[in-house]
Amino acid sequence: MCLEKLCGKCYEMHKSPVNCLLHLIAAIVVIVALWYNNVDWILIGILIAVIGHIIQAAGKKPKEKAKKKKR
Image (tube, rainbow, N blue to C red; front, side):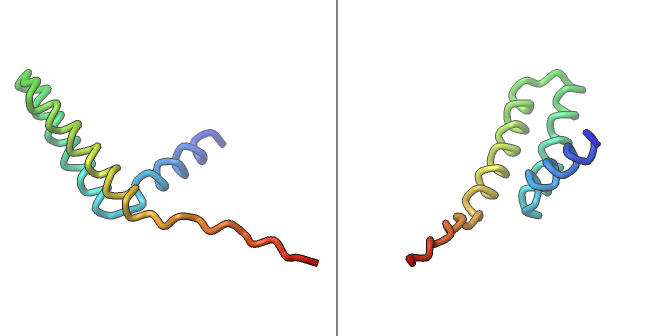
């Protein structure tokens, strides 16, 4: 049951295909940077992931509040 909640949250975090692609690129960059012990590229990989989250947040439509009916 806990795994279902985690997968649902992961899906919501990477709903945008651009965000998902940027996270994959960021993961590859960070893994290679860790292999070569390069701190600059680790930070660049993290920055790529953050940019993906910013793009997804900018593309979200604000939720409209339900209008109350007057009686």
